[in-house]
Image 1: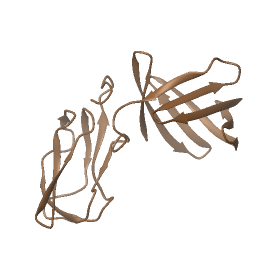
Image 2 (image 1 turned 180 degrees about the vertical axis):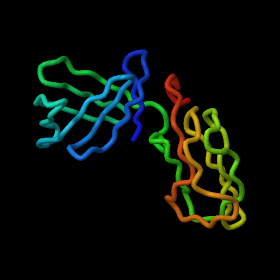
Image 3 (image 1 turned 135 degrees about the horizontal axis):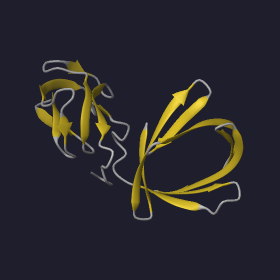
Image 4 (image 1 turned 90 degrees about the vertical axis):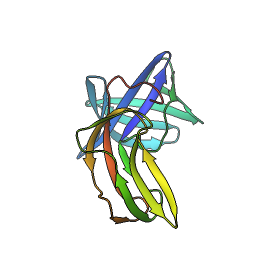
Length: 164
């Protein structure tokens, strides 16, 4: 899963992957292993790279305030659109794939049309939520797809800004 957050003027992409022991969170070139020990809303007892940490996380609309142990709280602002932030773009309706406009390995800009779906004489374009490179294409023209089926997977560009 990919999450985009703004911290002051900076925009960061956080990649979260599940592991056998919990999760691996990566930002820029730094990764940490995170295991949830216990959750007492809004407190979380975690083990980060083997070190016990108590975190408090409070969400308010697009803001997330996080405090780790005795450190000062940090306010993160969610940026970009939530749909497709993990790079997996899905069909939002049952339909038939009318056209696939990209190939795996191709670079795309935010907003670029990727797939055209048809249903009940209506066309719907699936567009890139951010700039990046197409990792995989999981559909072909003529395919009948159900809602939520993954159609395209995209890896974001490392320097893609908010909403790009």
